[in-house]
Amino acid sequence: MEQLLAQFLEHLRYERNVSEHTLRNYAIDLAQFLEHLAPADPRTGERRVLDARDIDHITIREWMSELHSEQKKKSSIARKLAALRTFFQFLMREGVVEANPAKLVSTPRLEKKLPTHLSVEDAVRFIETPDVTTDLGKRDRAILEMLYGTGVRVSELVKLDMKDVDFRGRMIRVKGKRRKERIVPFGEPALHSLMRYLTEVRPAFLNNAPLAERDTLAVFLNYQGTRITTRSVGRMVDKYIKICAGIHNDISPHALRHSFATHLLDSGADLRDIQELLGHARLSTTQIYTHVSMEKLIEVYDRAHPKA
Image (tube, rainbow, N blue to C red; front, side):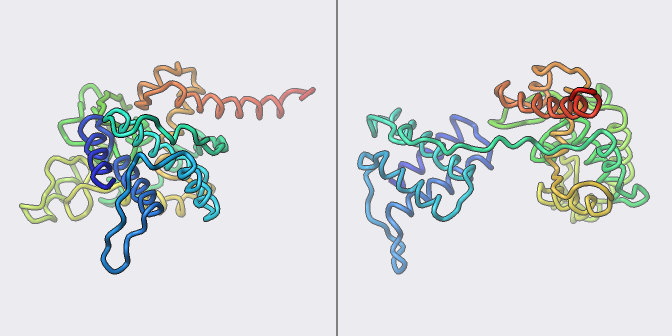
């Protein structure tokens, strides 16, 4: 069974080109399922040999029930079930099993949670929070401007290399999920902040690192001259939330992506164009922003119409 899991992960990495984040989640979820079926001996670390053909939908349903009793989130349980379905689909393709038992298990009903986003005024105020008289403030302003100005994921932003930026055309080339590339434009404010960071700050950050450790390719660097991480961007956003009065505390870097999409839709942008900019594989993923705009429309109606 462990060998099949290893083959499956190789299939995900090299044939389906899933992201490292997705690959890690699959590995964790399937390892937990394996531990549930055959716990490792605490002394030797060995586990009894499992045959994938012996696993049926009842076995999987029992694990789902156990996760529910442990008060795991429904979204987490649904993700683990999806991982099992994909795994057994792979085993069917390889001729290991004849049917996919995970397909007989119902997915937990998830609450439809609308994405958190900022109003236009709050987004502008939040982006302008960093103190641009400091080096870190100039860098952070450039990061926030680019996140809101392009709608890219944080993981996509931190992977940006200098060669991926077209300054004259004001566009960036990003590599999204499944390593799919797309071109995204950005505006003058983002360009201005980016150029100020690149000319006034980035060279100094590079000089802070030993020559062998400098990341000369990366656009956004930390103070030590190496590529900034998604975790660092998250901490940076948390810091400015506390400084910027009136912004609710559940804002994350991803909220700027949601704000980007919502504000485009509110201004009349076509849903398919927004899908392309966000890098969504399915239009149904992008359609959640129509619900956000509809909520705003209903609020305006309730406040303004005499018979509301």
